[in-house]
Image (cartoon, rainbow, N blue to C red):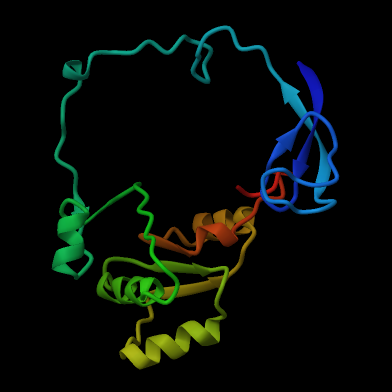
Length: 184
């Protein structure tokens, strides 16, 4: 393993081989910090057990019907191909204030009875989410709330509570102590 040094803009994540006073990507001044990068020489793509990963023809796989969880919104289920798939990730995007958090909270309520739902918020407090829930008439003991931005703590909460559904509102507020690079 070989290590090298790169300089990373704290504002936008731009990388440079040398320190710069002004970032050419976002024009921020004095935003670069030094980061050590460990390079590993990888001879071929391999799996964790050391075997080479060999591509297979798509026709060699058998398609299996996936069990889906209905969101309670017919049109959203249609967009999702019939509902939410266990183990999958859905990224909900849109302009600020368009109603993403409101829709997510309504989905949490509609899934009640199917298991606990963990609502992780890195932007809004429990009180703000509760005010929205009250406005929507949502009173659900299966919705758990966690106000957190550290992804390692969120992961531990997921392991401890074993929810049926995890909502992270919003993913760009999350960080990991294991990563030193700026978010991009």
